[in-house]
Figure 1 (cartoon, rainbow, N blue to C red):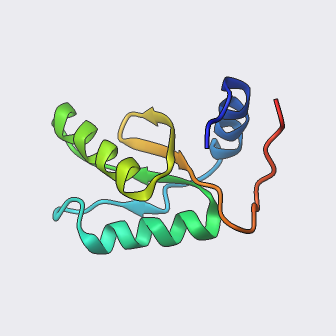
Figure 2 (cartoon, rainbow, N blue to C red):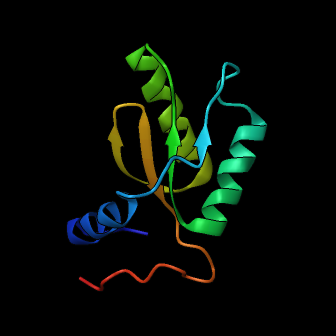
Length: 98
């Protein structure tokens, strides 16, 4: 799924008041964490994931792995928080056409 800049802006606006639903712990990105992210994406479609890491490269690699493994769209990264979207079968969030 490809989103236009307007659609991404719309989703970022919807994500603004959300709190992170997943927070990575000391163990980093595990199978269990990925399963929770999958469940959250299926249920909510638009989620925030907090990746507390002091190393920029490590944080970027973890976020890229999350996006790759979940086949979601990375909307934005603010500090340690990744905002991502993946449309579910129910299409809970209606995105503007343009």
